[in-house]
Image (cartoon, rainbow, N blue to C red; front, top):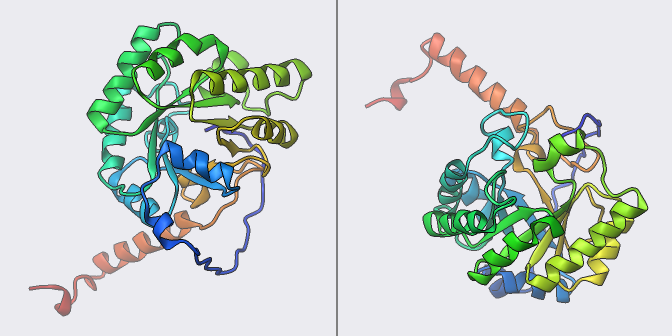
Length: 291
């Protein structure tokens, strides 16, 4: 996802456990159809990123509805400053790792930069590779009318597509900034037009990133497919965050829309520091920790 330098305080959250009234439904495999059903009955959709088996297993068992194998792996897993460098082979590797850990959530995989723009045949080939080699369940693509041909070709092959409008990080060099998109009337009108087009050609959902909340709500109200927001307010059908951000592993990213649910960087730093001390002092392993 995008990066900026806005600061936002962490939230101190109470320990609240919400029990579902429909255990059977919550255990059922999430599909693209189920996401539409959730929107129809007003149930919000929860979505997080994951990039490896262990994290995906935890996220899935915690009850997440949808897991995004995002090209944000380029940032949080590799350390690149943008999403652009990550390759199709790398995305397939991450997607396959995630699929090995997931039983319930719907798994969606980003098509990385350069694998679908301007060449619909290459777009289809890229999507087919993701589906066959990782066994993921859908792909996500950034853009609207300019990539319509690529999306239609993928959809015609029976591959579910999630759209992505608003701030599109793969276009960072075009825009030159991660600032809020669609503030101006013309850009807002195009976003609405593109959203309608994505629904009409068959996308099952759309991510809308970093746009005014009123605009995102308007799109969600006008479309029948789910709108998943990130930095798009609470009037949409669901929310997505990068897991390294919401768990406080990535401490250098603090946009307004981010709520941190943990501070794992400090917890991990402390645990590793104590391990180092115990090894240096010969306290670890003790007699009960050896054979």
